[in-house]
Length: 303
View 1 (cartoon, rainbow, N blue to C red):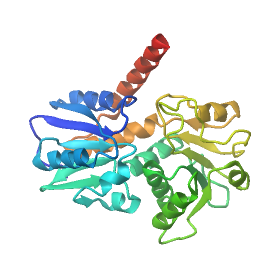
View 2: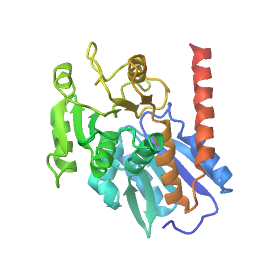
View 3: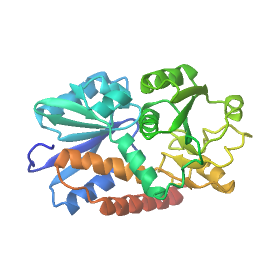
């Protein structure tokens, strides 16, 4: 439960870099629609600047900041700097939301619930249900975002393969997130040879930063390697709306979606945690869509 309503909510996002972020548009719209006074600011902090990260945690503890979102590459580092973790954040080993409760800064992870909620919203009729077998997902990446997705899918009954360029990172994730079922999460190297040996894949999720600024032309999927034949492709990246991976998927006739819906849902859950008020999700969706449109227009003008 949220602390008592405060006169002015000081919220924000910490990560590095943050020039691409559209989270302020969503949260400022949510504050206005909820008739709450507040601000949502950006705190770009390089991962090596531990002193500044610790200072932000202290600001939360002192009530000078009332809530922070956390994005790459700080989701795992800040999980080590807070006073406590929610059960989900502890299981995932990464945080995307910070709040102060009873003088303690608590790390939460709304990415997992946000991803799963969006997946069910996109396919409410069970469009990803496998016929007489386990549903199989392939997750690209093994960082904080990937950990949340793998946790969500494994908890939802999926068989998950994690592919990372550093296979030891994928192996570590698999061990930590499948302690109860060691066969639930399997690690592989993210390369053409390993991917070509995979069998059936129902869902392919990109949880790497390849495709987002400043790597908008990059594709995490190896060149000349066919995408899994019947896979739905979900890219956590939302800016740009069409990444190289999504373009490849749509050209191949795959169902595909960007990460805007997950972004809204995880943001809504964070907003509710901070304020105790129902998040105006449709308002947040419209604000994000408008910000994305403005961002695209600006990019076209300056290019």
